[in-house]
Image 1: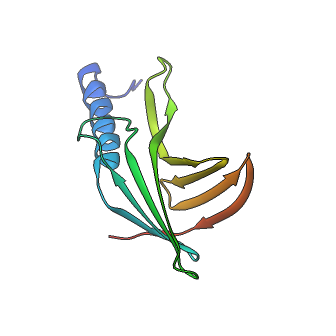
Image 2 (image 1 turned 90 degrees about the horizontal axis):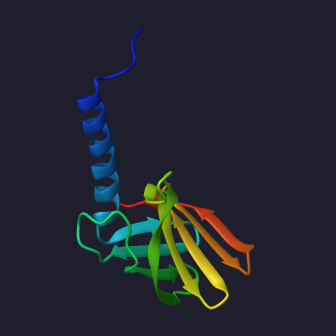
Image 3 (image 1 turned 90 degrees about the vertical axis):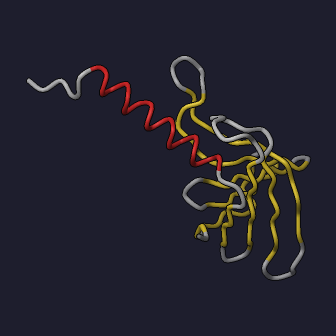
Length: 125
């Protein structure tokens, strides 16, 4: 019966997964292009932090050229011990509006929980 890798190897795998999550949010100047918007995300926390509440958003409407700058935070699922777990994306608030940029390349804008815009895009290299 195979119970998986030995305990030290499991710990190393868990640490490697956490390091990947940290590296994923520690990048700066991420650019998401959707049909209607170009969104630039800048994570301003030190490398090594799992979550960050200093993330900037600069959204440019591709049709009108209007820009919107916001400050927000990373969003994660919560682990059993209530610590941040899997990285989901970034959340930015502007009054009653919430802008969510998902890890997979989605942009969702809501007003009082009502979805106003939902687009899928591509992360630029």
